[in-house]
Image (cartoon, rainbow, N blue to C red; front, side, top):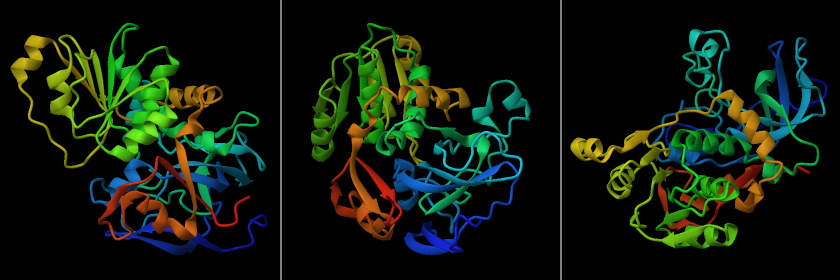
Length: 347
């Protein structure tokens, strides 16, 4: 631990009601396969915002954050996958690799995640350092800028959901929601040759999406009435009934956004007679994280980043996303796309 002189560090702590910039211990390198990572940047995820608003569960006292890149500064005695100096992106989705689900290529549903989900029920990455099992660290391609690499984890989420959607090459696709995840879905679709619609009702997000994604048809609307799409990807978590209403017969609706209390009233007969497929992808499998790392070499993910804010000004960072550190919504609403938190003084 000589590479880290300090015993404490700054961290964005969820106290059960709101956020505080706390002083927390620098993680000890206590596991043989672990690595200590100096965090370079962490993206504020919709999940982080939902935790603050009481819409997604997290353990009080946890340091938030899971979309991160950084530099390995120390490794455990048995580590061999990474070494000090490596620039890495973190896969925060734990799997044990030994249970029946993991052995049957269902690692994304590993039942041993409890207590090991970064920024949910174990210390996350909105801090200066994080300790991570080396299995979940992926070296970055040489020269990849961190503003691009920090979006690899949400890209893996998007790939899992588009794999579940399985759109045909001539399918019309509507993406519901123009936040960073919705924009990322549209960006990937456009890169595959589709001309997706992106439907969003917030005027700021409409403007940001139109600026970042000139190849996407961005629509300012409170509904999903965009013709008869073959596929609807709902990144909001609250538009399932609307998506089922508008999707074409034989079409697919992907439930991507996660809201703990969200429900939908659906007509079972309509789904059956129209042949509608409603799917949820769940977490991404490990193989898709590897794919996301490779795809990031050519996808301009950094287009979605609008702000970088130091940890010490984390209140301002969350305010850009329409929520106060006290867990109340801000009257200013959304004023940003993807917001990154960076340790103070990071080079």
